[in-house]
Length: 271
Image 1 (cartoon, rainbow, N blue to C red):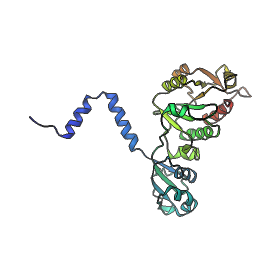
Image 2 (cartoon, helix red, strand yellow; image 1 turned 180 degrees about the horizontal axis):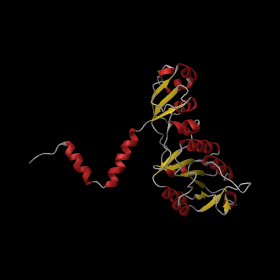
Image 3 (spheres, rainbow, N blue to C red; image 1 turned 90 degrees about the horizontal axis):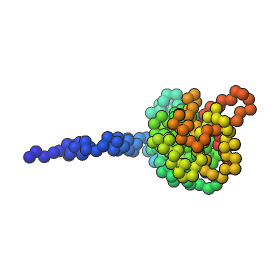
Image 4 (cartoon, rainbow, N blue to C red; image 1 turned 120 degrees about the vertical axis):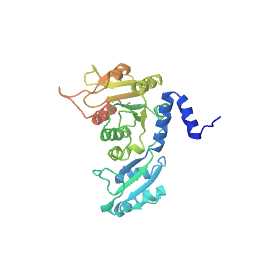
């Protein structure tokens, strides 16, 4: 009887697994191998100072090394010093890196339940429905940090991943403000509702304002869902939220960039 090689045995075992199990395992391995290059003095400094960050490689120009001396010492890393004219980090040519680049693993903020129910006072979350621009998400993270939100939540697909551009726009907020990416937005909304969250979807044509929806209910946990500019919230999202709300504008014509809308909505929903 012919014996199977380890490779054949592995292939045989894999063939017996359901497709969704195989895809989940492949995604987990890909995630474990993923790294991100952060760039810019602020983003690199905050990542170096963040004990939660798994830091792999640091490239600095002499000038940047001087400006980041304290952060480099705190991190315990030994930087590679590169000539500014031959900066060797694998960045997009248009990246304004300011002579600093750091390769890291994406942050793991833990489970949705733990993040959503942590903290003191009125709990607030921002959920993003297919907001893919990293600059918008970075700006939303800054606003979420300023207004004390528990987290910003996107989806694993059709959402801005953790990138250098996102981190630079967030200006350090990415290291402090949880950014979760869940598998399915509608399922996430339902899970939050079961945790006691009132989930409101922002829609310019909604009948009630954020303030009206929260009248007498500002002490409850609130999730604010924002859609991509143009298409806005998807039909499934609109069906799943507890209510649709709008930002009250002073004039008939009112339109805000999604990151600005997030900031205004968080302010309007404050306790």
